[in-house]
Image (cartoon, rainbow, N blue to C red; front, side, top):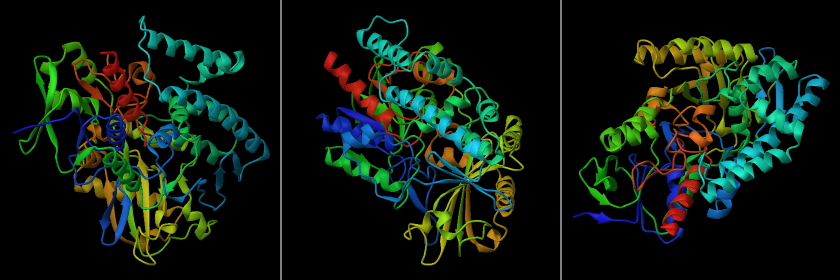
Length: 514
């Protein structure tokens, strides 16, 4: 016996849930199959020590698209809204970035940051408009593609000659040159550099890091929030919306094969041998896992397989979770400041030095770190009077020289804690339990090839018109009935919902045209 659906979504990450909900609202009979025991993909909340819960991978909300929220009626419950970024100094003279306001820097730097933010926010707004559209194919006479290309050209011209030239100059630049030209404060330059490289295999001097910085801003112009109950609350809300839209969601059902019959998809098969039939299969998995593992290279053209095989997806970010019996002491911070986003990135050179070992398969001796203490404003995350720390740590290469055995994991965790101790000298005395997720662990738990958040590096040759690869930039794969809806598709990763929404719209538009 097999069940038949109008569409099957492989993977219940947030993009898969958005795609399924939109198709369900359009009257389609949709099935979502999630490998893990809970929906959400990398946006989940789970316990890591007795009584301590944490946003296991993604831990901050800053890219959820307003159009997705509006169309699906998403109303996030935020424990902390509009978080400031505090760039930590060992002597307690921190730099605080709060919207367009910067404290702890010279008057000139504060003025220059306001100008910098105004320009980058304008450019990010332009990008964001096209993040919520199917990217056009180049060299086509299709009316929809030509209309989108024409709109893009017009929007560039509307920037004005000077700003258009600045945008086209900046988009391929590195963040290092931009911050050294504009600012004096080492901590300000370090914090901006960190924002440009988080989750990437890039350093501040790498080309395209202005693009990755603009990408980060393109969600909500840099505003960062923490959902009450962690990131899993966003995924659970999306799952509730999808179910209300008629979608069937089944967890603990890993898909092992996308069935191909006579050159087109015919359904999926799960690890326990169940088969579900559909002429439309939408993969929320990354492109490599989708094509090379679930479909199989024998079912697609060899040159396309070659492009997918060479898609760059080298994870470099680890996740450290600490169960604490109390808050550590950081000179210059009050308790309320622990509800903000704290970063360790001494200057742009510090961030670049942290990246250098990763080029050779080695961990940073002095990593860059993004820390949050979600339990300060959300007491559901830890036992009464206790605290949780959640940190993104770079650089920890997926392909570590010698491999990620217990000794390597313990060594990098110790390195990270020693780095934090320079700012919070007593933190080790407060630790009651810890968990370190390396990129290899992230790959294993969240099924991301290479442990890469974006399912593929965000660089100009893997962006927009050619994301994930040439010939697959419009969600539809070169196998009839197969689509991508995850972070590997346009526009990329982050908890935004854009790829899921765009994929659903592309599927419905194709059905209408058929």
